[in-house]
Image 1 (cartoon, rainbow, N blue to C red):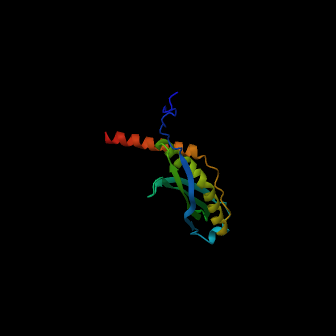
Image 2 (cartoon, one colour):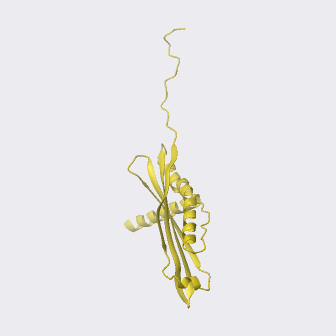
Length: 170
């Protein structure tokens, strides 16, 4: 055997494993309006509650860092003297800063649209409930959300909007 023979194969460039980390979770904004207090406390009917949810994300100035925001708008209305009255309007924005490094673009989009909101949402649920309780209202419990289905629905809506825009342009 030759002593100078190199028996180690050349090192193939290895791809770095994707990295995901929660950097911070915080309450970005919270507001409560009760425009018809104190009359609403005397309303005989139980209020009708409407819950709207939205997810947004954007890249931060530092590489590989992203902010994801889950916003809930909760509106309750009741009838007083046959008139619709707002009992309360709550809007909360729960946010998080996430490190996503080494992901392919398709996977990064999915992590930002599914994993990150799923991580933030329990904090949002708690903050909405707590805010209403502190305001003297019964808590509203936001139900569980399947963010994978929510993400798929958002993607379909974006594709439909893009297709409609393409038809308008032509």
